[in-house]
Structures are given as C-alpha cells and as structure tokens.
Image (cartoon, rainbow, N blue to C red; front, side, top):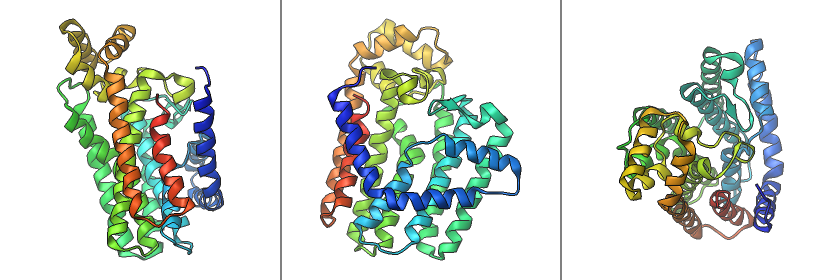
Length: 333
C-alpha cells in the first residue's frame, strides 16, 4: 500500500502519544517480563514468543494515560497495566485456537507453533497470573471491576461463537459481541485510571464511557480493515473474518443494500466460510457502500469517546487520549 502524508501524520501522532507514556510503559514491560517467568519451560517459550510478537500494548497504555490524566502519582497503575495486558493476551491465545488462526501481527500464532492445548493452557496461566497481581493490589473495587470484565469477555467469546456462520446476525447482535469482547476491557482500563486518581464519580464514569466508545471504534475499524487492508498492514490476511464465517459490520451492511444475487453470494460466504469467491464478495461489499457506512459508524464512536473526555481537567494526558480516538479510526480509511 502507498504511504501518504496523512499516514505519516497519523504515525507521528501515535508516536507522540507513545512518547508521553514511554516512561510508565517501560516499567510495565519490565513487570510483564518478570511476571511471565515460570519454572515450566514451555510457558517461558510461549511467553517469549508473545512478547517478541510486539503489538501496541494499547490497553495498558490507555490505563497509564487515564491514571495520569486523573492526577495519580503512585505506582499501582504499573501493576494494573500489566494485569490488563495479561487479560488481553490470554484472550488472544484462546481466540486464535477458537478461530484456528495461524497468523497474528504478521507472525505465526502460538497455536500454530505449539498446538492448541499448549496455547489454551498458557492462556489460563496468564489469566491466573493476572489475578495474582490483582490480589497484591488489595483493593476490592479494582478486583470487582476486573472480575466482572473477565466474565463479560468470556460471555462475548461464546456470543461470537454462536454468531459464526449465521447470516441473519444484525447490527445490534454484532455490537453486543464487540462490547463484551473488546470494549469492556478498554472501559475497565480507563475507569481504573480514574479510580486510582481519586476522581469524582462522574469523571470516573466519563473515563469508562471514553474507554467503551473507543473500544467500539477500534474494533469496528479493525473489522473494516479486513476488507481494505493486506497482511503486511493488518498482520493477518485479507478476508480472514469472512473465511471464518464471522458476520462483521461490513458484511451486515452489505447484506442490507446488495442486490438479490449479491445477497445470495454474501449469505453463502458467511454460512459456509472459505474464500472461494473472495474477489466477488469484496466487490459486492464495496458496491453496496458498506465500507463507507462502517467507517462512519466507527467515527461516530470515536467522536463519542472524545466528547466523554470534556469533563476531565485539561492536560497532555487527556489530549493524548483524544488523539487515540482519532487514530483508532484513521487507520482504516
């Protein structure tokens, strides 16, 4: 894909946000490496692979940004950021097994290298490690939010499983899945930052709302990328969601506006998976205006995320969070 001036600017904006959070994130990374260590060799091998796979560490970064925006000046946000990353990474390990994925962030998945059983069990290790760290914080409010969040994520996984191959999934059902699978962890990350900073209840709620809306925007934009990107940009192959029979928003919108022949092709693709007619399906999605409509929906949630920040005190940290709202959707169009 050709690099544009806008691409360069977005990269620079995101780099500035990362730079602001860099001091805290270095400490988070150190703690993650320390707490991933185990006497079991296979756990260390898979953990090293996960760390080497990179990723933006967006969820823990959101937490440290929110904590600083809330005026927090202690150390607990470092441990909480690690907890959030452990929860997220464990869901990725489980996701890749369920989806039978062999590529993530441009690298082989753990299940492709070590098998499904090892990936599931190391995912369980990460979940349990996150709860060990939670207990060390000795704050029932924190534990309640994270316990509720992990339970909701599990519900989202099951809901998504039920939706696979179902061409009748509507927008509300799709949003229910991404709320549980993605947005709730964003929301917990930012809410906990406000909680640590001792903000008033309305501002803590605003931070949670910011995280929830950002999570929606980020996931919708990600689902859009599956049809406008490529393996080098996205870290997975174009059409992967379609191959897995996942009825994401571009497909849902396309089904609403396509002609009858295209609808039959789209429904068949969702119900049977596979990429036999990928070019025709992508053409149908593009002809229907579904990509533009999906992008507009992502922007709607990104704008709502920015609006939620207005009640917070002005600071570079708040501005960085607003920048992330823009970045979440600008990646995709």
